[in-house]
Length: 177
Image (cartoon, rainbow, N blue to C red; front, side, top):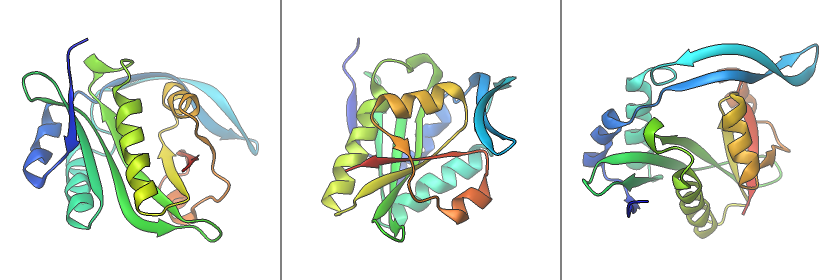
């Protein structure tokens, strides 16, 4: 595998997410059925950014401008191929949660450990900020949730109501720091 460079993103780097292919085929997704979460067949091709490119671009910029952090993975041509963001606002009633707001890897570079590396960079920074746990509002695709479980996330003990109301299909997870 090629050597990648991981570094903090600047505002100028944000436009690089235009080069990321966020497409994902979703065979099955987690849904609430009769009060129980279960995998259901949805056979859906997501060809663009969920909620639109502008939403993710603006959220990335807002994270950086508000004191949060964004980490990027760059290929040999200095092209952004993945990024993850962590916001510096604390959530939670019993514990100090920090939100892992975004994590995207371009389609062509998935399943190579890039997402795990970006996630761990965010977790390391969250420890420096004295957080107890990372909060993740994961998309409900089976593969997305499986990724987070594989790196040590668990179902969130505290459900953030605001995030739930924003998208009740998201799977709220946490990662102990």
